[in-house]
Image 1 (tube, one colour):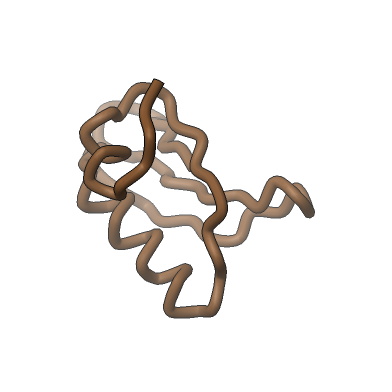
Image 2: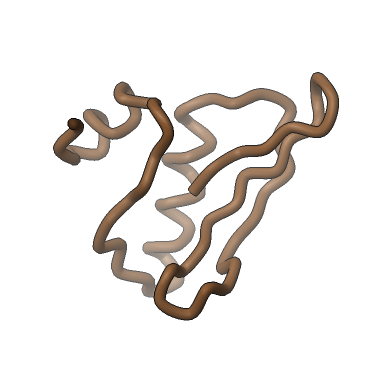
Length: 71
């Protein structure tokens, strides 16, 4: 799960299944906010996905909101 920006206001939030190496969801965003990650994860849950772990790159506030341990 990560967002990559191409320019100042065009980003792609990508969620990937590491077991199959497939992108399972993506969203176009203008900014990187925790709410976009939360919405994306909720949409995956609605589709029946079970989220076993999340790899993040420093968004500790998001991880704490999700109830995950942060190192």
